[in-house]
Every structure is written in structure tokens, then in C-alpha cells.
Image (cartoon, rainbow, N blue to C red; front, side, top):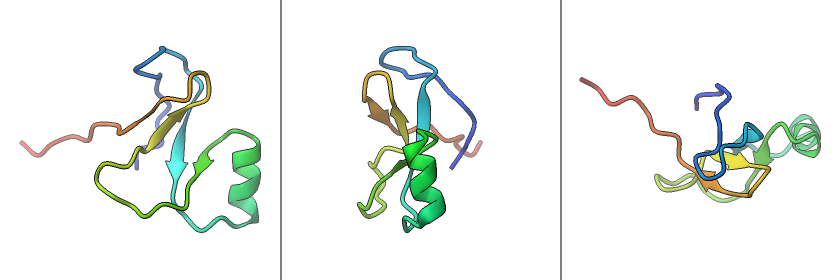
Length: 68
């Protein structure tokens, strides 16, 4: 997943963080408490969001570069 900061496509806020599907250890739980990422326990699927906006709550899939 691209960890580059982005802006929310719904509201334009820069308060966006990646959605992480890793097992929630203490380090990841602390990062979530500090609003650096969002943890989810849902299985990884093609249509699952990989970005979350703290300003409006919108979640989206960041487009990937398609092969030429």
C-alpha cells in the first residue's frame, strides 16, 4: 500500500490515514490511538478501502498505477 499522504476526495481534508489490516499489536494500537492509521479486522478484499478520512469519515480505495 502506498503510504504517501493524500487528501480526502470527498471533503478535501489532509487528515487522511491508511487503513491497516495487520494483527493489532501494541505498536499498531498506539498508532491508531494517535490517529496515524485505522485498524480493521475485516479480511482483505478487492473492494475494501485502504484510506480513511478523520475529518468526514469517508473511506476509499486509492487507485493503483495500471501496467502500460
